[in-house]
View 1: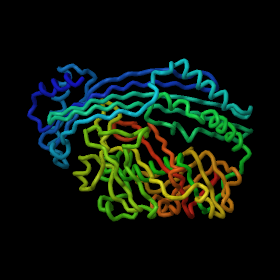
View 2: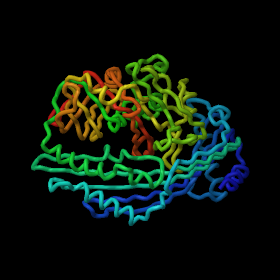
View 3: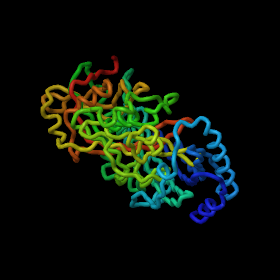
View 4: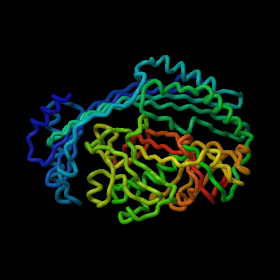
Length: 480
């Protein structure tokens, strides 16, 4: 691949300031089973290239699904013409030396077992068995299980000597059960919809506690049928890491994207309550709030060595001791906004330009064990696994629902609660953070479905968090 791309760079003769070629090869397989019956088995492969050209401070893009030299040359010409046309409307001049510096390196996902170590039939047999094991009672009226694998290879070269190779291996699993008793219907899944999305190999398909977890999910679905409704009150709220994933994603990740703050996404994904002037001064949350952008965590779904423009990815604090420091912005957005950012220009495919995206956004561990987090709570609610979410287009006011909850009374988990929900504003909520769990409570999850951009780009992100306690939060049940 390198020789073809180097030849293409040498043979694209355009009076451009800078030229880049990003080749992407995606291979994915999908398997799903419902009530023990296979529903889907498919595999897809796509390959193509995105040509990026900088002319007089403007950037143009064009994609092609052919890697032939003539096709790459034609795409480069289209990108060049696009950049020339855009010059009369440009909003900020870019420079190749700062926005597209030379970089050389590679990144490969860690794995133990190759993704092809199990056949489609063997994967289906496992999923069928999971569905059978989920049906712990006749009150279980639906069971589902799924597994998806993905392999992505990218090659990035540029006219100023960049050469970056990255290979990503992904595996996601999902299973859940729906229980019914008359008009009461309850759902329980493994940490929420497809939250178990990681980098790695086939070893991720069968973790050590798989069958105990499957049994527990089925039992908890039935348990929820006779559980009390979540009370409507203001109280202490304790969130498990699988719900903290959604909380971080919606109320920290999206509002810190610099293109939203600049107004680029306002037409589709919305804006942000955060302003450019807030960086370095805004107290986003309590002093216990420490959020990092960390693409270096082994196995987390959005780990990488370089973003899709070649920027070197490093671990950075976005929020430290509650104070907002950095945004989620590419080199271009950082230059436009005058705000420090991170290496987060990412594209979902070869036929999409890279835009500002989340990657791994993690809440750093604190010092409390789970027992210490709930020990001093006279009354509170503990919630797990996201079920629903709603947040305004400025990422300010939100309402989230979970699958499963427990009442906390006098420092102990007691009754099971169904239909647990909570709501707040983003600043109010993060300022109410009163305890952060230690590393023994820290877990990471991910999702392949973070949507943004026009045309839309659904991309994978990762979030790690410990168990957290929040004070004086409004919680309510399904009838409110």
